Length: 595
Image (tube, rainbow, N blue to C red; front, top):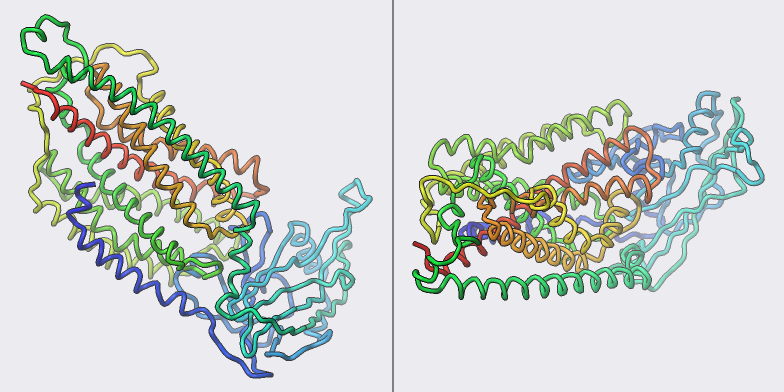
């Protein structure tokens, strides 16, 4: 990561900027003090099938009682990207003002509205609201299947009475929950008009919980003893894997390399008597530049940028920016940091490209800018079209798309170009301890298990096995309704992933060179990044075996965006694998006399 170090002051400034940009997110959390009878903001957010987290709709897309003037709340970029669409709710929950079965409205549901509600109840629709920035959930109805084997006999009911239970401490709201009255139902089983009287009850209760700890309720749900036990089991399992792997490989490599150094350190006469085999005898080819130099440099630049992005996201997570239900903070951070780190991609890609081949660095810079953003943009266009067709809140408004395009045009692209210019002017030379011969040596025939695909399978499996258990919790949080807050454990797992990836790639590179195969550049990148392919394979398992997601929209969102995330992992870990291999190869060839 030498090139990152050259940009260290810029990275530090970037960190300060990001922390400043996002520090206001936490302070935006409601810190209002109320007097008795004061209105407290209550917003209805969205509704959708419980098992399809990406498929959400506006609250009033269902024919609920709506206020005369529906007021939309202004939302930040991250909230819009998260699919939040907050509007004023029909319920009035004034501070410390209790209500008993207050009528919201009386409504005659038409036949079409009954069918609409019944389909929503059948798909387990839930609603989400925010009261003083605290989340509230509830199901809109229930299906009565008791004693009925035939689905045609099921009864469908809509809840028409909500009870809000609010806890307060002096002049602040601490906790809120919603309970649906199981005895106050509207029968939706038949296709006919029905009368519905929507009501709500509000109960207030005092608590000693301080305002500063009101979000701990949501954090604790992921910190329960049995969850922590499994998490720590995952960490111990991964650490044991790492120790055994590194110990085993280090022992082999050290003994083999020691013998190699002794053998290759002998005088020339003794060496002449030996048959030329092993990694020393390809010293004239091992630093021969790879094919597709521009693509290789662009992949390194993009991978380094994504690595930097990941490190900054972990920094923000560990200082507490991504506390539960800080709406849109993660998406805001991803967009802002990705835009600001594009200069790193430009610098690394152009600097490395100029070391390999000092021609047409502008084309290389364009390739770097499009290598990750291109597939992401095409995926977004397709999925946004699907969301528009479904009228889902995942469809971004035109204004938000314009903002993202402006960020890419006015921030990402200029920083990419500036980084590229800085990389071109760095005039760094490629450090090769051996002189490269004019003509490449012929690579001897190798067994099938030494080809690229078996080596990638071997290289990807070990890092994946180290993170496998933690992946479930991440998926359950991103593609479900669990809350993930134990970022310290996740950071340890990430460090383990980097160590295992680097070590297994170095080991495979050594065995490749020992077999006199000098085309290790791309191989080390592909082997390092192959964990991303295993993660995508896990997506198939998770979708079909561990989740209840269904429908074209949810399926396309899951596999589309996970493909982009796994591709990002491929670039990032591929960069880590190549950098580790490059350090290793330079070290071993610097340790022997090559003429």
